[in-house]
Image (cartoon, rainbow, N blue to C red; front, side):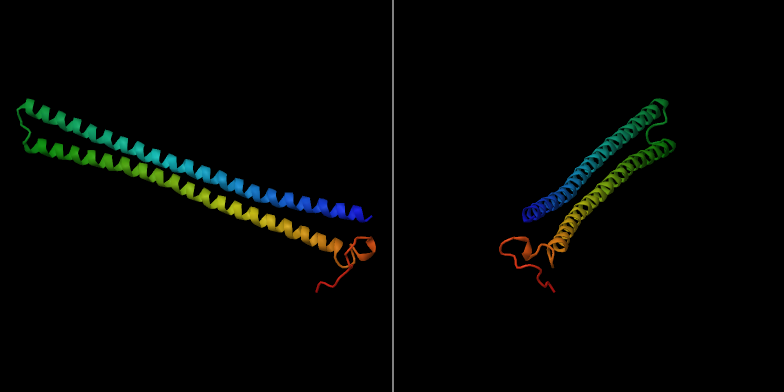
Amino acid sequence: MADLAVLGLILSSISAAVGVAGAITAGNTAKAAADYEAQQFKIAANEKRAIAQRKAEEDTRDKELVLSRQRSTAASSGLGALDESVLQLMGDVEEQGTLNKMTSLALGENAARGLEDAGTLRRFEGRAAKRAGLYKAAGIALNAGSGFFNKYGDGGFGADNGVEGYEGGGNYG
C-alpha cells in the first residue's frame, strides 16, 4: 500500500512539473512569436518610409520636368522666362510639387507609425502572455502542493502506512 502511495506521489509530482514547464514554455513561445511579429512590423514600417521617400523624389522630379517644360514653352513663345504670368505659373507648379512631395512623405510616415504601433502592441501582448504563463505555472505548482497536503498531510499518508521516518499526521498550524 505504501509503495502505491509513494508511486502516486511521484507521478503527481511529475505531472505537476510537466504542467509547470508547459505553462512556462507556452508563455515564452507566445512572447517569442509576438517579438518576431513586432520585428516584422518594424521592417514593414521602414519599407513604407522608403517607398514614401521614393515617391517624394518622383514628385520632385515630376515638378522639375513641368517647370523645365514651362521655361522651354515660355522661351519659344517669345514671352520669356521672366514674364509675370510665366513666373506666376511656375510658382504655382513649385508650390504644388512641394505639396505633393510633403504629402507623400507624410502618408508614408503615417503608415509607418501605424505599423510601429502595431508592433509595440504585439510586444506588450507577448510580455503579458509570458507573465500569464508564469502565473499559470505558479497556479499549477500551488494546486499540486495543495493536493499533496490534502492527500498526505494531517492523517492522510500517516505513520501507520509503513513509510519509515514519517511520524504521521502533524499539526501544521
